Image 1 (cartoon, rainbow, N blue to C red):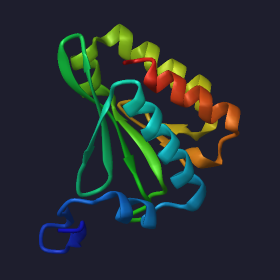
Image 2 (image 1 turned 90 degrees about the horizontal axis):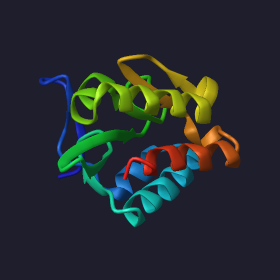
Image 3 (image 1 turned 90 degrees about the vertical axis):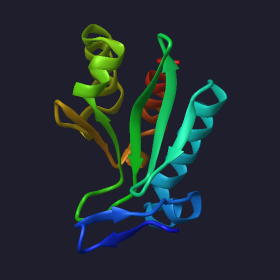
Image 4 (image 1 turned 120 degrees about the vertical axis):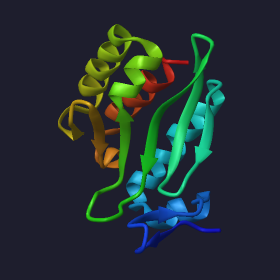
Length: 142
């Protein structure tokens, strides 16, 4: 079932697929998300589709980890990459998570917002060099 907003539950339900995801993304963000997903899976990571987008997952230190979530615009929010840093720190360690956050800020600059829930907003608007750096930071976890 495609993902849709359930007003009774006040959230999205169902499972988004690739076609729906890209139909809901801005064209430039969608192009970057395609490249990121390809690089992620080629490096050994996995994708998990959910109601609001796709999660980038990996086995890190012997544990399956949800590294980040790619989400198209919805509910007044722009296309973005989200990292739940509190949970991620529990899975990969505080030091490694802080190093990751610093590297993401270095790669994506002003497109990064938040602290415990880090969002990289409109990554498709970054320069090609910054997009490549962002991809390298994320795939470097694998």
